[in-house]
Each structure stands twice: as C-alpha cells, then as structure tokens.
Length: 97
Image (cartoon, rainbow, N blue to C red; front, side, top):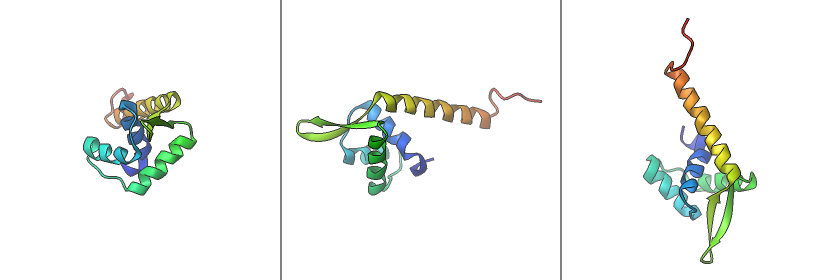
C-alpha cells in the first residue's frame, strides 16, 4: 500500500499545505516512513496535475504544488473507500450468517 498508491500519499501531504516537489518525498518519508523513488514521485505528481487534482502555484518566484478542490474530493472518496475495505477485512459491519 505504498508506491502503488503514491498518489494518495502525495495528496495527503499537499492538503496540509502547498509544498515544493522535492519536499513531497521528504515529507512522505517523515510522515509515513518510506522513501518513494524520486522519479516516481515526479511522475505521479505530473499525472495528478494533468488530471486536475494538483496545481502548481508561484511562491516567492518558486513553484510549489497544492491540491485542488477536485483533488480533495477524490482524496476523501479514496480514504472512505479504504476505510470500508478495512472494516470488511475486520468483519465490522459485515452481515454474519
């Protein structure tokens, strides 16, 4: 559930505050305890931009990235889905026969 779902980690970091691309990888390592490959982070970040989930913004002449409203909505849907999966795996709310 790490690199395969890197987009969720990136959106999670960016929803806290706009961040430089390099710093996304650093924050993932600090917050989630794994270091995704640098090129993978950039590839996923650019895909998120293309899909309208993240946007670049100017910050003192430097480019930072922030999550869009669309990105927040998709992130919340994904988190809800994952919570439902965990509940099913733990048999919470499941209909026992």
